[in-house]
Length: 165
Image (tube, rainbow, N blue to C red; front, side, top):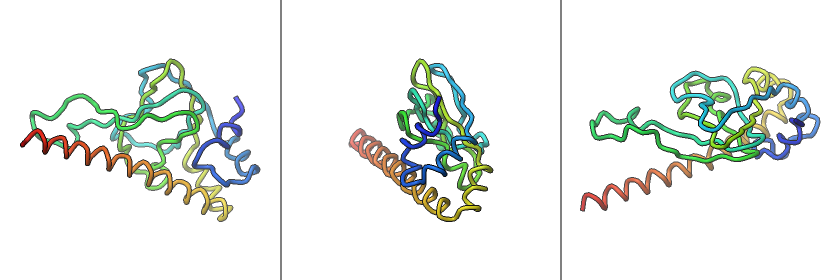
């Protein structure tokens, strides 16, 4: 698979020089998943950024992680469906904290490009122009995802209020 071609289609690499894309492509490794296979779990540690080369990924949260109510849903809830060229796991690049959600393959064959945190951050330190553009793109991507989650929360709150009336 041509990693650079996939990376050039990813939003987080918007306006990144081709030479820099080629360098990132060299640090990538590829991993494949079958439908339903977990890529990583909520509350696990992580230090990799993922870009979808082929297939789909669903992002899930476990409602019981934030509720002590016995009637809380016990099933994970899908909060996003991601497709070719989209990325996930970005928070690990920023703070190395625990994963905020579970990622799972949502298609028969999902191929991911995996970029190690330390290698891409090292590249950001060496090339500040690249680092600025990448972090700007990551911020825009995370903002878009946060807005989508915010709308889902608002929808759920309105739904809960209407059931209480």
